[in-house]
Amino acid sequence: MNQEASSPYTTFVFLVLVASGLLLAVTWAAYDAYQFTHHELTRNNDLKSTRADIIYYDEVLTMSALMAARTGDRQWIDRYHEYEVQLTKSINTALENAHNPSIKQYVNDTGDANNLLVMIELTAFEFVHMGDQRSAWELLNSAEYKMHKQAYSDGMESVSSLLEIEATIARAATQQRLLFNLMGSMIALVCVVVIWFMMGHLIRDWQLKQNEHKKHLELLATFDPLTNLPNRRLLIDRLEQSIKQSHRKSGYCGMVMFIDLDGFKPINDRFGHAVGDQLLITIAQRMSETVREGDTVARLGGDEFIVSLVDVDLSEVESVMPDRVLEMINQPVELEGEIVKVSASIGISLYPQMGKVDAETLIRQADLAMYQAKQAGKNGYSFAA
Image 1 (cartoon, rainbow, N blue to C red):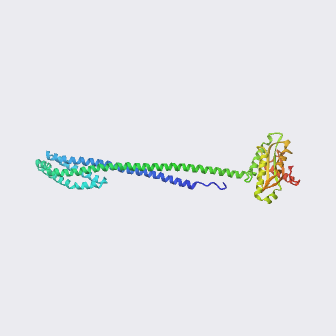
Image 2 (tube, rainbow, N blue to C red; image 1 turned 180 degrees about the horizontal axis):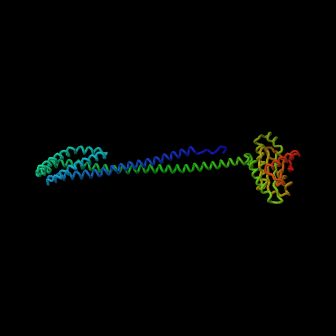
């Protein structure tokens, strides 16, 4: 936790790009499905319509030719020519929309029969123009005309059947394409949902790491990394709060003990810094166990500690508390298989005082008193003047 929690920016951007790509793919698939479906439905409708038109126009042409021969009415001839054009258009439309090459082949195969039918029907119309309806009628009922008519009808029937098959295939292709695009879209959407949850988990995980990192930084800023005791910064904050509240209880005071270990340097030089650190940790644990809840044991650095006591009974100020701390520090400690002992010199400042004091002033007073204790022979305590 010494480095800042890495940002998931790169992964987040990658997931966003993937999700965007999938959404674009879904959009494109939907548009493609719409285009294909629209085209195939249109072609399917055109094929159905064209098939029906070819059958209808063929019947109209036959009926118009026969009615012209029977009645001699030239309106039927005009009707014939009008629907002949419509039939040609319908056949061309069928050829354009149909994918099956057999349809073109059948149309071409029936071309000769159709041409012969047209020739016979036009000849019959000439008889009608001359007023010879009988000859026209006989021509349209001749064996030759019926033979060509049957050949043409058979060819057009095949074309009609193939158009129906083509329309069925178009419907099936549309359904298959829709199903394929639907499955693809569902898979893509599922992937997007999965990516969304992954992004949420990624962000939550990053936020958790950021919070842990923030707590770690706060810990480093307010606690000593070796002993895990409050450092000077946190001590000052707590001591300032105690000073503000110290006037509330009569008969009680606050106490600041500046503690410097005696003989720590020789032990540190003899056993090494690792063992010296272990001694500091042991002393710190003992002091923390000695004070009450609400009191503060802090490490200023090196072998210097501060014990801040609140609501101390004035009757215990000059004996019980300092002696208890000295007794705890004097207890032997086993280091590298050897029993060593250290003592401490303690300077003590009290509050409230006659004048206004702050935390820094109290620590400075206790520091000066600690030097007086050292000059007096160490392993003792001295009160600030």
